[in-house]
Image (cartoon, rainbow, N blue to C red; front, side, top):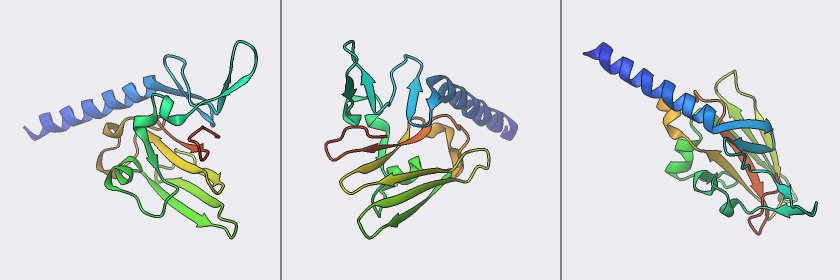
Length: 154
């Protein structure tokens, strides 16, 4: 009976990991690219060649965004950050240096400079792939900086 439960859990974790991988592929460290070609790019070009700003709230990722440029996290944010530790240093001018340190050695450290008025959100679309506080799907976790109006900066 115990082996069946372990095999079932393993199958769920593998399926969640494959689903997360298929959902996300990253073409650059500054954007999340998804299967339908929409992304979290700071701006995109219109047909006239002009760059257009994108609000995080207007993307499909808004529901998966967790504010991490604050000194306290709610339980949902803590769950989203499974497998990461966050180092936050506030400089004299109010700028924050925020580093996401992955506990999995296969994952890269991510560092962000968040200027006064900006916010840093951690995007975690599939919490089911991070059981037991560990990070197992390396393709669905990024952070996004937004300006004071909610537009994606980085």
